[in-house]
Length: 205
Ligand code: FES
Image (cartoon, rainbow, N blue to C red; front, top):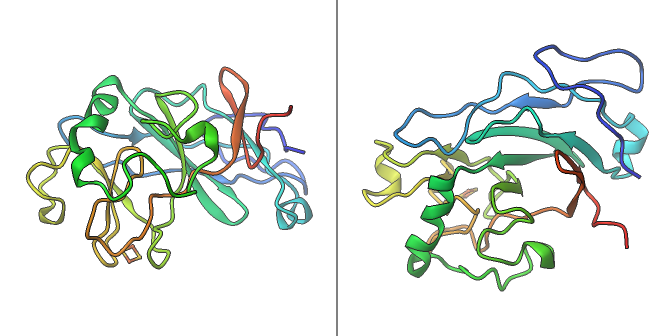
């Protein structure tokens, strides 16, 4: 059973023993067409410590996340990214498939409903666990036009893991010949409404 959120806003929410903030803004990098822009702070009702230990799902209100925005929530102790991709970002996804290790997501790194070209339920909203599939470092967003020499001149925007240099496109698909063996993991999730996502569960039958 998911634990609903009650607020999104710029303040840290702490209104009882069952509550604490668990969302935090993710720094965005400057660039020509940013993959994600900073969302100042998102506060939520979080599951109790006991519920979290049991792997409770987390319900997130994404109504405050603008196109290009990104927030990170904690689920089962892991960071889960929620990125609202722009049309420009979505347009990059077919451009480098020949350079990707698993462009069609054959490996089981996502639920069936995210085994598609954008690896998501809604094309614009990307949900992924922000942990590198090599040794567990945290990749960072790197926008198209970045001067980061590790991502190459034809970089279309995506994620870069600084630990050993793995790169992922804007759908979390790993590039070939990188240490990370698989695409980033997409956790189970479903939409409770247009703007509320439940992380950690598939949609009720
Ligand atoms: S942990 Fe990401 S490349 Fe090694």
